[in-house]
Image (cartoon, rainbow, N blue to C red; front, top):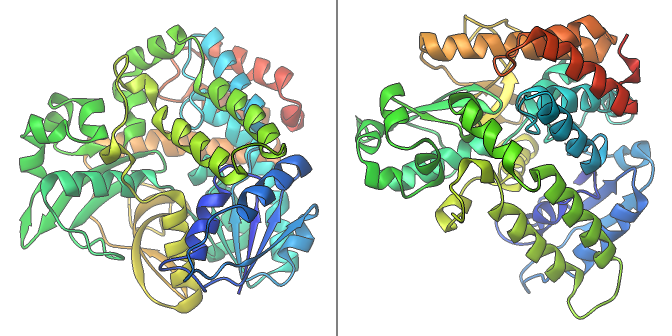
Length: 449
């Protein structure tokens, strides 16, 4: 079996390769083809993978690197896509321009997420056309952010053969279940009630042995304080809502605090990653005392510890419980295993609504517990969202569908409307000004007219 990774020079590639080389997923893939538009990043990742320690019992796939996407896709069975349009420098512009206009510029949330989507979707559509042409029978598992919007834009082209993933929902479920003392069976979401869109969802129930254990967890500040979401939101908000929000809802429930924290930070998250990766990739290509794998692993740890820093108090570090979760590679490889072997599993995925949530369009991509097997992924039945959840999901889905329209057709007015109606944008004038500056600063947005 062959796996093609689009964005093969990306930082997360070693996580996928490590999981394919030992343990549960070893032997599932024999060949890995890496494509990246940046040859130096591709060469650096090749060095990291070559120096990765592999257990004696491991089964390491053969790795090839390709400067042409169609070559990488030739004969493939599975495609992972994790491209970064505009590189990390583009993310820095997204953040700084938003902040200049008094708006949140987080990578996937607010106007920063819209700018990122407007760059990502056209590039992913071009790669989607290559997949449809060169490997029409392949499955595409999309990591490219914003994952929900990118997946929705690709579905008219690739249909059910594209599935979006994110590790944030299952990470929340695993941390909350551990705190609540609820066992989770691998590949099963029995008793898990989660509903939402990508980076906008809520854990509403954790039922085991006929009892929902979430209310007791929400009523226990000490247990909530043992994991990240409990500390981010504190005890009062989850208790009021009757559920645990996805970590990205911090930007909605604490918009003022997030905006002030990001504006007051010496360095944005994008700037940290941009600097780290520029130095790291140079180091990876330069012989030294530490192996490329050791350099990469140290950078991985540093990167994870700084994640969502604006939601934590000064000096507070993430602990091992915070780092516990699904991991992109674990979610992606679990989905791949089911698609290639037919072995069914239940995962939280970005899939077509199809009428399951009556409040949203049938063609909308939603993030729900889903059953996945050799025929694809289907969302599992769920209870209707509350009025609050429904309202926020509907508002954001309107934004997302306008962004997709703008990215597919080049409709500038649709892009401006998407920014103007976003719940995290408080001024129509600012919406127009920030979009104009994004277009001036990003050459990739010249297509908007």
